[in-house]
Image 1 (tube, helix red, strand yellow):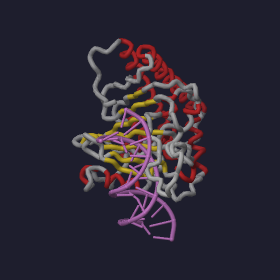
Image 2: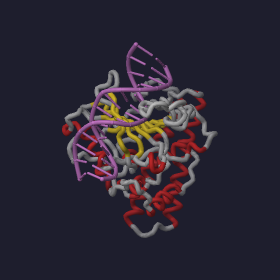
Image 3: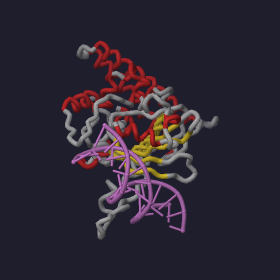
Image 4: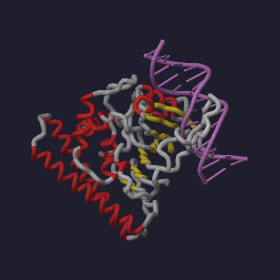
Length: 320
DNA sequence: CGCATTTGACCCAG
DNA sequence: CTGGGTCAAATGCG
């Protein structure tokens, strides 16, 4: 699923799909601005704004839904609906085939046998995933812990594996992989698997509320030094240093997969221009909830506020 | 001292 | 058999 540019001879359905995506993007940006202004005014949000938000959100939903049905119709189950205009940043939603196993640790081992259970896992088979390629590493509100790094065949840079910090204390199954794929304009690909079930979403939603002002600062900073310069390792030593402060990232939502009927075999992709959507999804606030305790209260309130708009579409759930 | 990262081993899917 | 994903001991850091 390498991203590439659009072929010139796109089927018309596909073009329409693109249009819908573009519309959705623009509306999303408006919404972002609106929310931002609202946030600036700081007063409690008045009803007018709320309602406007709802309208915008509905439009977004409609656009994306239209797009998806178009793509589905024309490509059937194909999951190759992944080509989108190239942008420094884009996301690929891959609501792929049902996860055959909820986790990797469980059933795979019939016999733990030896104390050393290394490598006891079930290989991931392209379950729900979101691919995000950015020119910068974005921070998005979740605490990640690195658990592995692998040199990948034919790849210049190693792939790094992260799991949610709260995997053990809260059983959160979210994982992600991050890999640098280009150097000169640095380009990083993050692939998210699983869904956060931990209560740690504050950052993402909070970010949403003042995203515009944060913009670049929302990117994970490696001490203000370009990643490429900083590390001894091609990519990850520096990255890990950031992870150490609880590298946070936004992940796919944790609920949407509860719907067993959610169609499988989709491969969604959004292509926000600029890094706007990326920014939308990133967050970089602060304090670390690490340490294992973790139940911050105000946290959930914010999340609720953001999630209160009832989306039934996977994509929007992802976005929000 | 506790927690996060590093890194080699291990296991499985293809 | 190989490449890729995960585990966990060793190590590092605050």
